[in-house]
Length: 316
Image (tube, rainbow, N blue to C red; front, side, top):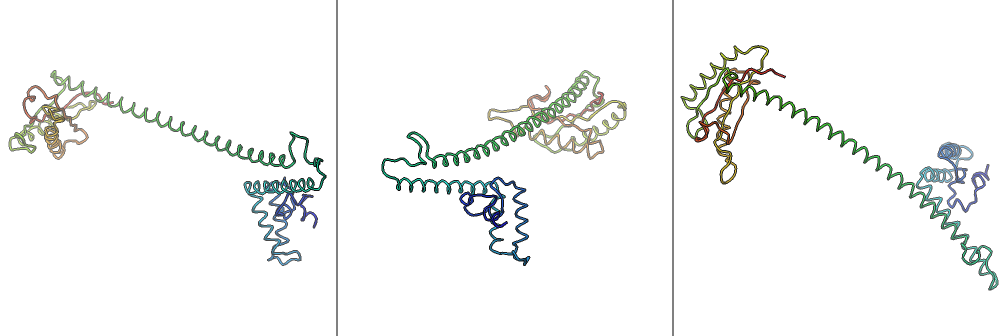
């Protein structure tokens, strides 16, 4: 038992410079499970708190140190490489001493013929080969994980792109069908068959608030809309369209923002009044056009806001 502890399965002490394998009583090829079992067995015997006949605090501390190093693959490999270096240095030292002890002109036994490899060179090459293999394995593992991660990212990106494209297509088709239905109703209204009600509200020149005449026009429009809504068939869709216009879309300096702002504010006043008068807010729609005003408003500043009950198109 004592010999197994000291040499660990007959291991040469040179291969175990700090005695870690000897402390655990295992060989260099011990698996992780064998290391764990050996540590538990000796910890029970040497733990200083157990107070048994073999309790030894110094030995137990060395056992813990050995186990911490050998159970870590990276630290274990570094420890084994240090053993290779120790063995190589001893071999080179012996070869050097033997060469000095021999008569001049005679070749040492450990040195091959000219052009061959020395024993130390073989050990060095073996150690470098092990390091290279380990580094290659780590690089291959990291490269493989990177490839898998990139593949997952590409797959997620593709799925996201497909989902966004499908969403955009759905929105486009919805808008197209809605606009087509509305345009169809507007065309019918212009030909005399689509508007159940049409009115307008005139704002004072340069103003965005209703004067007395404009308030009267809007009140009449609310009454006319309420009467027209009652005539809409139940299976038909309808909406109240409020339109405002800016005579021009741009000037020599660029966008004619001032004209846009007035037209939008006027439309907002009308929509707000209709909602407060009890007309269904979900049936109110606003449309603003710049540079595409009707012929009778192209020469002015777009003071007229039109109100139309658009009907009748089937809801999708």
